[in-house]
Image (cartoon, rainbow over all chains, first blue to last red; front, side, top):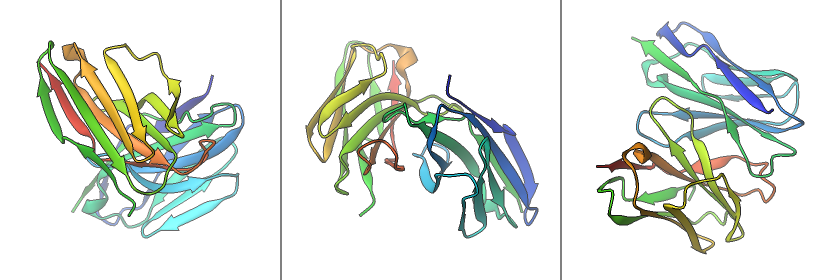
Length: 111
Length: 114
């Protein structure tokens, strides 16, 4: 069964304290892995798509990487405005339009 | 324009009411989705439309009825809902025709069933 597990469930950082969020996945042929940011009461906002192991993408203080079993979202020198829930999602070759979401990591950055 | 617009933002309805949620996108995307999200949980897929045809129904109860009038619009008709149906309802669209592209989400409709 296709599955996505994110860790930790919650992460509290001081402003400027870099860290990483983990997304482990098991799918029958990865078509794509997606990272989204979601603020409370809002819809998820697309951040990155990764398609193959070794791929990396960056956007401001965020960098996403992908291996054959997991993806990391690295946050460098976070600011309070980076506080949000970060969702990882995958699509499998056999899944059609189905996107499987992880439970998310709630990030809190304190000034 | 990379926006998916959902109306209304908030909706309170009784268990005997009939209401509709609306979603609109003008990005030329041919796949549109309805998701349900409970507090502190990830989005759960409900329906997928591809080229205005229903391609996935994730065993959603018949009190939820989707409709895709054209390539830019998606509706979700609600009837005889239960209090446990209270949630954030998200609409999304994607460009990819085989599901291998990112989805753009609307801001959601916060539904409360009383």
